[in-house]
Image (tube, rainbow, N blue to C red; front, side, top):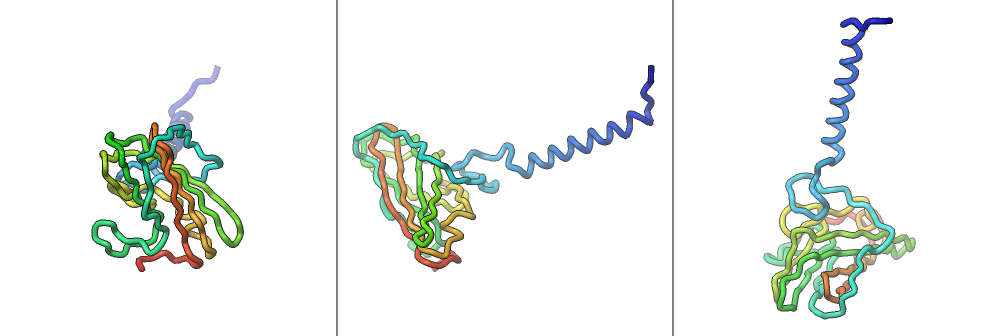
Amino acid sequence: MKTLTLKKILPLALVVIAALAAILIWQGTSGAGAPAPGTSSTAPAATVLPVTKNPITATGTAPGLTISKAKAEDNTDPQTNAAVPDRLQFTLSNSTAAPLGGLEVYYTMKDAGTGQMESYYQKLDGLTLAPDTSATVYFDNGTGPGHYPENKYSLYRTSTNEVKISVEAAAPGLAPATATATKAKGTGEKID
């Protein structure tokens, strides 16, 4: 029977410690423990990947949720009217007598030149629309209320062709609302 000596155990222990340290470092940089998509935070935005189908299952028919001012370029801050960097943004309005929570958005981008399409889904965590109020939401990887993550490698950011964006927003019990926005030919979204 072989006995383990300190000389044999020490190298093995160092390998195990190094492996554990590497795992902890990897988890810290891979987003483990990062906030869920759509939450406001000062941490880096969560990775946003395309989805293959629309997960919204809204069956409501009552009116009350609308989308207006959908833009994908020449954007402005709704409070100050100052120019801001291009991003997908739109205003959601609640015309009902009750607060609206559980909001979710599905949007599809279509490259007018190639026909390529990609779609994204986002729960609007942290957003509740009080009765008869509106709120603008931004897909810009920003922080703070109304800012949600975006894929910086999406068609919107990488295509030099015109990109049309179709948006669907939903809230429990209400008919979904829709809107469209267009990015013209070219890239290099910036403050206009």
